[in-house]
Length: 520
Image (cartoon, rainbow, N blue to C red):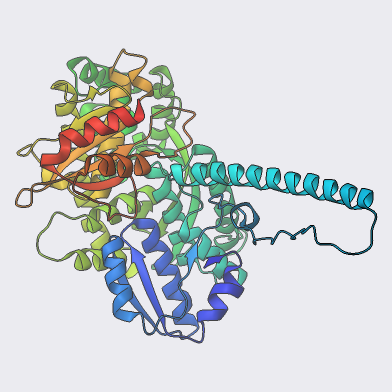
């Protein structure tokens, strides 16, 4: 069922039940799960948590517990779900008009009434055809594209707020859920700014302190604040140089895969007047005098180098006096823990580790996630440099195509959908800045990476075009289905993200040919 009133139609229904909670393997879902766990704990609701990474695991878990399941709920708040009357229509039985009416009417009266009924039936049929045509158009538009609405974590926080059970921790999880959508380009800039405005009001309410009073912070106090901070990945936990080199925004604009790009980076640092010794050491170890005005210095120099959006609206959290994190830091860390290449645990173990890292009592796991995220970002930029320098990104006509070869360094890091998505989007951004072909700048990207050598499978992913006006709608899910169907390619559409599929390597050639003809 679809839910519009979460409090009445969802929470009050399950409050007296034992709840089976299916949670997808993405950061926003984890944050929504943490908020729900806190609410369930508050109201003493029993629940079972089942992580699911795709449709197969969801089906298996559902079949295991189907006798106990009474209600299955899917949240769709602003995804432009068509109205009921636009899609469904009760069958109207046409009145039968036989010519056996023996009501004593004159023949001329019968003829007039019959003509009126014929006109009425004709109009009704025309309206039915128009409704069916409109229904086809609405369903085509709805099913053709895949796109994202409001963060699930924000929806859950709104539920907690309506019940006056919202806490600062819940607010932080909602912020991370929204930031995850922005980091992964799931929503537009306008949607992000709008939702930031909503959360900013909650931050002011929860973290308000009267400066006239003596409000000394306790050592383990949690404080969230709104900031205009730098658009640099993990820079407060890294060196400024490493962050500049491994952030997609700066790496693509400087074109750091080329010698000329490296020179531009040196010119950028010289323009700021920052010594290389300071830039290449950990941010926390930099001179305090430099750090005080660092954001303004970087923004001023960035404007000269054509980077007008070097600062962005975001939030940070302080745990006591020592630990400070930006929301994007936590997103990268949690994502890396979930997609960890370490083989010392199963997917469920990585899921639990990522879930635990969101609690302030497990900061050691969060710091471990930050180290994994640094490796992931480094490997991503190195792979992008390799793809662009060896011309692996080629135009197939209606889309760009890039395939990572078996044996490429760090290739197994990109076997998971989230990691491959990060690489694909950053690669497309870099390619747009590197190519002089105007048409290619407007094309989407299809990315392929080895998945299993033993089974001979590859992961294929589709990324929408990288344009300022992009509405973040992805049409590849439906296109992949049709291309596989028309060529009988052996594919597995298991991921919740419909634009990600598993494909037999042997069928790749005919699948791509079908995709080209389909999108041409």
